[in-house]
Length: 327
Image (cartoon, rainbow, N blue to C red; front, side, top):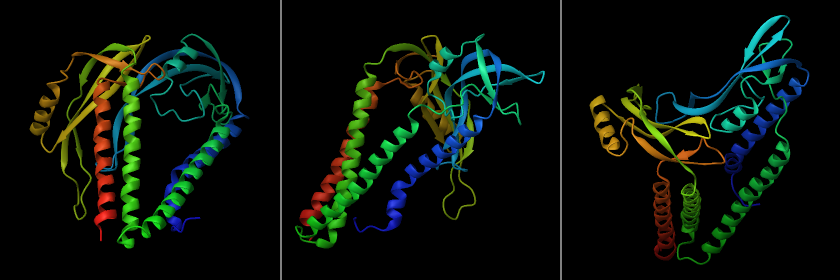
């Protein structure tokens, strides 16, 4: 095994650990739900809706911001002990939005009769699906093996590369720097290929009309710098667009602008809106496999790949420079 500190492996494996812990918690909840009682119910509402979801943002005070995401709002009624109840939770799993919206609406149309599973101790807690997706643990097992192979294989490869370079460059003490620059360049280059592939696919997505919408002024504080009591007050706006695909409405965000004063924010917005006017009709490229995913500029997204490749080339040049001229 490569001679790396234990905390390096801990940092690399932490995301996998969190996923496995979440899967264990959900499995326990599913086992608990197996004892829930069932009752006939009826879907009274089945529509797509946009909800504001809190997401991580370390540039803001509090470390979070709101993001608009698409959800399937399937509201159903059921009766327990003569008391009529309503709920809109479909499954035990967490719904993070922008996923299988149309599929859920098609599966549970308004007026359909459904089986509701409810907690006998808290009848207001209910779901329509109480099983985990089939093959979940099999996929997690395969994914775990792949992640472990990548982490330890990469660490072993870096260690071997370090040992090789230490004997073939003028400054053996700089071998770690060469490996580091090379590794960063490789990762960024691979990200560029992924972005390019996604953009290439997006150019072939079906195109539907959409409408630009502009939010009101949003006031917030930026994350504070060390020694500051509070961050700078910021004023921003969001540019979103709405569209319909196969009779389901979706909303996506295409840009955000923010500045330290309302007037500066408006000026930045005017420059941005020279491209997208409020209420304007635009062409939206929609992912047919997940219509909540869309883009207004598929080719523009692909240009980001060249930026990433340029950064990767800089890291490669730095690695070459240190390896050949570091001494």
